[in-house]
Image (cartoon, rainbow, N blue to C red; front, side, top):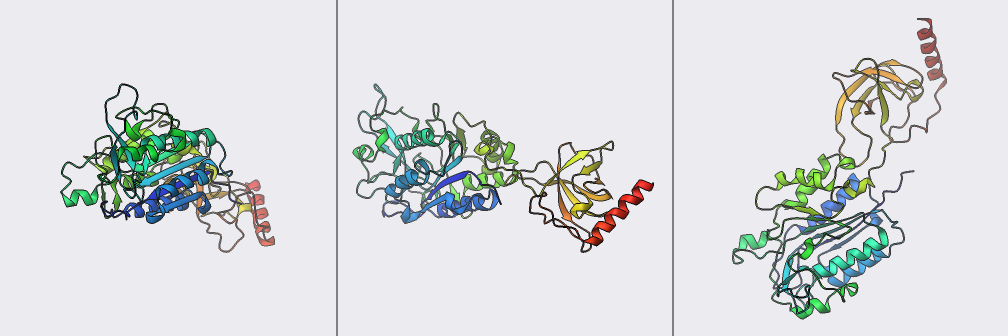
Length: 401
């Protein structure tokens, strides 16, 4: 029985907006579906632990209700479980009302994530101040293992009349909403608070969650036919990086060259230096077995032998770790030369570090009994009489030498 993968996600993406005043996007929904596939196929997260809200389903009301139902009030989520909140769509800025910022602050703007119904009947979407309060509520209920990914931007275009820039930038103006709409659309727990001026969604100094933003303040988050630059770089990096030992900060260093100039992603928060998802989903994969170095640096002792179906010529690939869902390319290959009842020996073409793991690539046992490679190595099939006689003869002849 597979162990539970303790990851829960709320994924929101909007390409097609209800208001004709909002320019539609092209690849936010595709990005969301790619994130879902990464969670399902790479990290093996069960489908029911992922909530998806796309286009017309991603209204402000649905986002807030799903945040409560699927995350805050979800009894299946235990404290410390990994939680991902992902949004891809337009960002915007709205003039803030009096009293929105700390006392003595001059007037300014609030940042918002544009829900499907943004701009309709005063709907302002999810404001920076609301999201901050929502996440603080979630942290209190479920712990601080929370990553928030925002593939949007909040800086006005330099030349909004440029159609190409507008179509490929995840920002929209906010003529259809007013300062009072910010107040009326606030998350209830944020009512009595004031907010620091000029930080928007980047206000993470005292926050327990980790923010993964598509760009730095004042920059554009762009997309193309292959998706948002940020989401594409994130998923590419996640699939080629040993995530079980990588921090968010190290992930960012590998992502930046993939995005190029003009858009600098920003990861922030008190936990940005901890392992991705605090390493929660990266459980041991029992398709791998431990190896031990011997006197020869190119020789490995592998913890499978004749009773498991290994014979001379059985081939193994050698890997750096045994964590599922984490990039783990082969660093060497071994062909077995000596077989014992519960272990075997083989040579590699070059030295490998200690603490490596091996995985069967070719049994080479010509129909003899073997263990199913994807099951725990403690669950063995009963060997045939012929196999037992063969093992006995092998042991007898080796003892005679």
